[in-house]
Length: 564
Image (cartoon, rainbow, N blue to C red; front, side, top):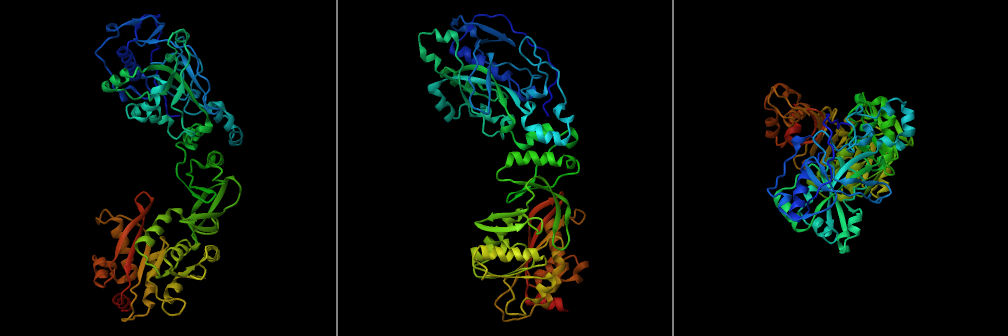
């Protein structure tokens, strides 16, 4: 774990004294309590000062304890368990005033010995439980779910609030910024931590004639936030006082996979992997080399936390390769099945992730193309159709006619099956073949007309196929001016002061007219031919490397120029 407090002096509890409990005095105590309770180093806090002293107000004789120079009422009763998955205990005294070196932290990583004041000793262990590091990966996979050292323990300050005021206090904005739900340590916890708790009973409260004083609730606070004076005044008017501190236990069942892996993995494998892609029931990771020895453990944690929607965890081995754009993968956890069903904008696509190319990240680009570029009833030619995601969506959403192609025979079979599954097989003609031949044949057969849109979604080599446009027929009377959509990788050129968009458009220009290779105004030349070339970024794939979408129109002047 990353929370490593420095050593600090112990605080000793002083004798009981009589102190002020009038409303203003209690707010002074509240302000000092919250301002001095720490979850982060002291530099993150603001001091809260009130000019009035408890000595200025009426005194009441109640048992008290002095903590860090602040008098607080004693409370000695424990709270009942609030939820079956979450145990909460109260201290025998009001909220502890943790100094800047006594951080609110997971207790499992520290010595269980306590000094006379109830604070844990300063002895700390390493950043991950040593009990795990002494075992094999197989042992961890079998035991991590029940290991008690994965439970996080926090000391949480509270407010004691009249029960009838709790709803209005939480509904308003007066204490919203100061609630425990704002704590970084509690973000991502599921189910969420319950902010309102029953207050413990007090022997002296039980003896009070006015039984209404016993009807109080506790609200959990964010100890890193100091309450400003104007809020103090409002709390004072509502008879709100500091409550006892809570010892809040967060078991591993409530914690995120990342949080669990931070404790299980050794320092050399930190931080845990954070990015993945879910395709149907399969979760796809790209493990880095320092994570690979712990791949099965990582997969086991992710499977446990993300099931039942995730049933299989895989990691990519090597890079996308070959003409089919597939990659090898290893099953880390779960059932060894990579046949998935994906739902994208109400269409269902079925395919084997190990046999075809698929990227969930392109869903947004498909949506944008359908919304901004493709009109109802148009003809679309997709040279690298894959399993037919764009084809099926265009046929359903825009009533388009689709001519599809892919070199991968498995992809074509899935494309045809997906068209039939979604009821548009009469709108889609899919063939297995080389994209060079497919592009060159457009406009030369009844079943392969010149399209309104030609899709070239093969970023690794799309520009290499552009020369095949020169085989298209030149028809001055044709109503269709085709638009080509090219996806390509690009990096900015700082020496030439060119953005990735500039570089991508240059690549397309050279792919169309290789003789422009030495020309500095390639884009201008294409626009003079009526191409209206433009580009936009699709997504990042690596530092400085992006996928660019470049579009241009195929005019008769361009085709004539390509034949020269």
